[in-house]
Image 1 (cartoon, rainbow, N blue to C red):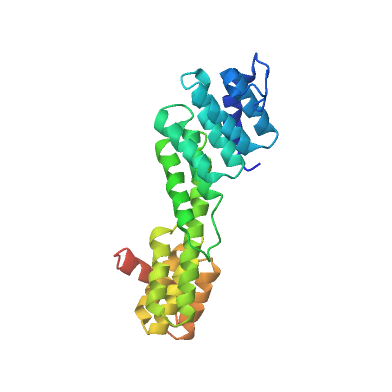
Image 2 (tube, rainbow, N blue to C red; image 1 turned 45 degrees about the vertical axis):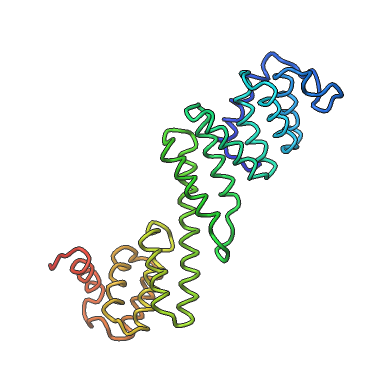
Length: 280
């Protein structure tokens, strides 16, 4: 199963009140039809379909609860369960539709955070590799941020934040992939623009040290020595122990662009002077 512990807890809270004190009296495929069954019976049939791994049929049966008994106590619960059942059957479009319908109908309900989180997962689970278009990744990021911003105290906010970090890293990796492509083909200005996006938008990701180093490489290729030194100063100040810092340091010393003495101190002084406006 794809869902997290937080999702399982919510699922239990959604189903327990129905399971208590009731027995299944019919089947959704009985000749009598669903119209002859109570809301509880239909809901229970949908739960059994879900337990049997038939999420698509379960979603349809949950929808019947809302259709036949729109004012019943179970109608609201059936909408969110339909969303979950669709998600479990990998019918992500229908899962989003049901979850969005739930948010439209019950925006302040206690299960609204779950509905929003489920929408985010329908995008997150479909993130593709960095070599392809990242529209789905950006949608996932937007929806995950909605969870954190609108429901910061919900049990889903922490997991959403972790996924936001991973999604940002994925988007940064895409920019790096494009930047390296330009760099290898000598399109240095275009490459620098891509690497700057990583630094400006995704600076907390693990792609940042390499982005800074690649800016050093690109600037040196363009003959922009001071710009290369400045990028290396940022790299040295923030990621001094990284291999990317060591690579930039080697590039600059190999071109005699650093003073013979106190070379590492030169990076720190450059950073203070250029980026912190401190001259001592």
